[in-house]
Image 1 (spheres, one colour):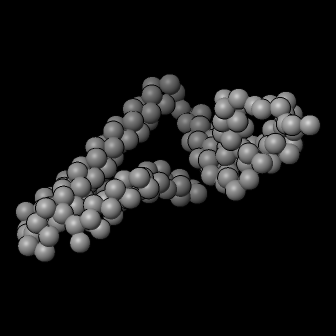
Image 2: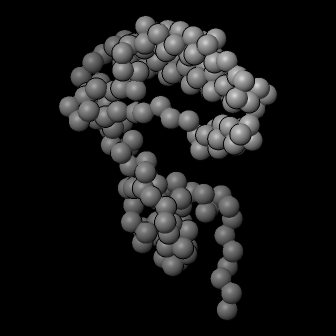
Image 3: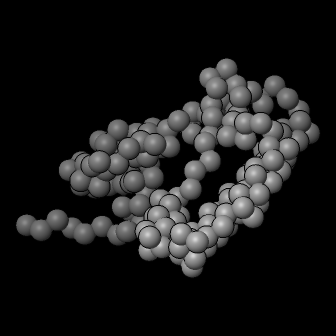
Length: 167
């Protein structure tokens, strides 16, 4: 007998719950009214990579619970502002990286990187002056939770492809 197909929404919900790391596969099967085997098949090879984020948020919420609403709002506003700045610098760094890749592709070994190196250094100094010396440290608490800013695999593949095409 063929297994009853499930919707993408149910499959996605199972994966989200699994990645959060709060429920066992048996509990996920019960919650979503599917077989344990199906949950195992959907979750196979998928890490519970969001669990540390959940735990960090719980710690933040606990730390904020002793403060009044104005302080909690001020903390949220500060975090949102830092997030906006980080997003800006990620985009600017990608622009510099893409510009370098395009220049190499266009000019090959004759490319001069003096202007681009200056732009990258200026961007780095600006990023440090706005976000501090260690912009990768977003939250400092007793467990030293850190977030490292990284480019997505798609962005890195595009940069690598552009560089390979230029060579």
